[in-house]
Image (cartoon, rainbow, N blue to C red; front, side, top):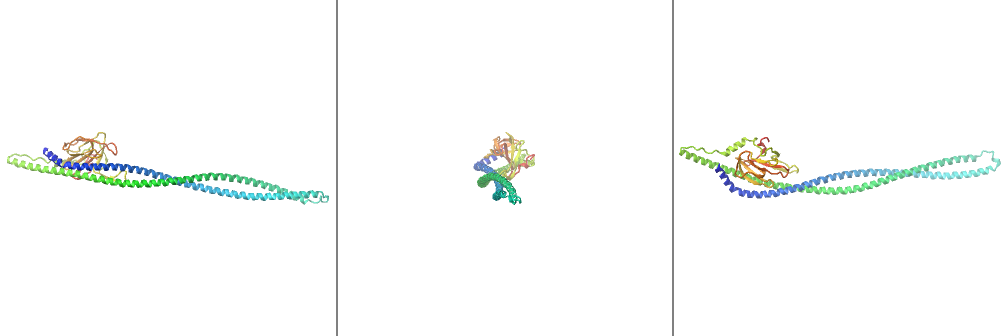
Length: 420
C-alpha cells in the first residue's frame, strides 16, 4: 500500500501543477462569467417586472378609455335627446305664440264690434218706434260677450301652457348645460388617457426589446459557462484517466514484483503469496452497494436532481446538473460515502472547495465545502468526515453539490444512495 501511495503521489506531483494552473485560469473565467450571468439575470428580472407592471397599466388605461368612450357616447346621446326635446318645445311655444297673437287680434275685433253695437244700442233706445221690435243688435252683443269670455279663457290657457313650456325648456336647457360640461370633461380625460396609453405602449415596447436583448445576452453567457464547465470536466476526466493509468501501472508493477517474488520463493523453497488487487476488490464492493450507499449529508434532502432541466424562471434556458444538490442543516458535515482515497482538492469560484475521492474505478466529488478536514492522498473509511458544507448563495441555507463518476461516465447519484 505504501508503494501504491508513493506511485500515485509521484504521478500526481508531475501532472497536477499544470492541470491546476489551467484549471485556475478556467475557473477565474467561469467566475467572471458567473458574475455577468448574475448581473444579467438581475437586469432581466427587473426588466420583466417593469414590463409586467407596464402591461398591467396599459390594460388598465385601455379599460378606462373604453369606459370613457362609453360615457361619452351615453352623454352625447343624452345631449342629442335633450336638444331634440328643446327644439320640439320651442316649436310648440312658437305655435302657441301664433295662436295667442291670433286670439289677441280676434279679441281686439270683438271689442271693437261690441263698442260699435253699444253705440247702435244707444241710438236705438232714443227711437221710441223701435222699442217694440226684437233687438237683433242686443242678441249679437250677448253672443260677442260670450265669445269674448271664451277667447279670454283660451288666452289664459295658452299663457299658462306657454309658461309651463318655458319652465320645462329652461330645466331641459340647464340639464343639457350640465351634461355638456360632463361631456367636455370626459373628452378631456379621454385625451389624457390616450396620451398616457401611447406613452405606456411605447415604454412596453422598449422594455420588451430590452428583455429580448437581455435574454439573448444571458443565453450567450450560459453558453460560455457551459463551454468552461466542459473544459473543467475534461480536466477532471483527464485526472481520472491519469489516475486509472497510474493504478494500472501500479498493478502491473505489483504483478511483476509478485511474479519475481514467486520465482525467488520457488528457488528458495518458500511461499510468498502475491498481494491482493485492492482496486478490483473496492470496485466490486462499491458496485454491490448500489442503492445502499449512505447519503453524503446526514438527514440531507435533494433539492436539485441530476440531468438537464428547464430554468425555473427564464423561458428557453436550460440547466445541466452533472450531479445532485443536497440541502443540509447549519454546520452540516459532508461525509465519505464509501472507503477510498482523496485524489484531489481544488477551489471552485462561487462553490468554495471541491474534494474528489477515488473508489477504484469510481470517483465521487463533493463541492461547496467551506472548511476542508482531509488532505490529498489520505485514505478514508466509509463515513469519514470530509468538511463542513457552505451556504447556498442562490436559495439560502446550506447545500452540498455531489457527483459520482464511473471512469469518464457521469452517474445519477440518486440511484446509488440509500432511500433516494
